Length: 310
Ligand SMILES: [Zn+2]
Image (tube, rainbow, N blue to C red):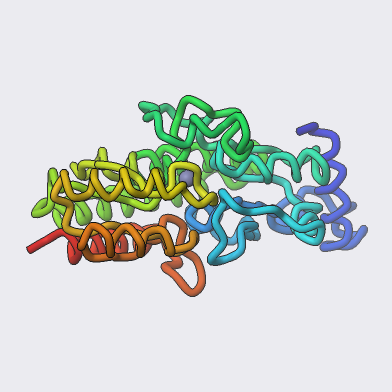
């Protein structure tokens, strides 16, 4: 981003919000300036950013509820949501569509790409092999992008968000710091709660629809045996599904997991062929799904426990 563009927009907004007289009267206008506009690609980041920003930012989420970031093609009208953005928060990899939209519509907005901003142990996944002809994963070919589903990594994203907001709005530094600490504490609590919930199924064979759950599975000791849709958003071949059925049977998996945002047809076929139960996970949340990050994690953990537990 360029500081000049940002300052111009802030100044223009401050003028609109406070009037010229207030501006002339001195530093009061800075305190009364309108909140930042932040656009997040995915609901979990929208929730976390909103909690760190408090009332110092208006936060919107670009991916519509129920949509998969893998199969998403933003409409031109969604560019309007970005036009006034001061900060755009993206995951990296699977939301590259937003990066292209930002470059086209709001090149002055600051950008926070979580995968680039936090330190983490990258896990490779099936999805990377699709990078060449499925460009939603281009740019992060080596790392599976679903880092937000490990709350310890989400806590690092919270710190990165606080830093990005502080850079844009130094007057809010104390607020962002305090809110980030509170949010990190909540994430640590939900991490402990999910670990306790899933302890009875530790080591269980886990068959998710696509590679969204590798960081989650690594954190909570689930054994990913096979995924049903190696190229998310694209139906797997009958031959691949037949192999998946064999892998499910061989591992003795008790259930397989479809995904709310992607079609469940191939999961139904595999569940029926393998003679196992079918449950549905939600890696993103949002209306009418879980609104907060904690609800998102807990609701998925409960589905997994119910399907794999005794
Ligand atoms: Zn994915």
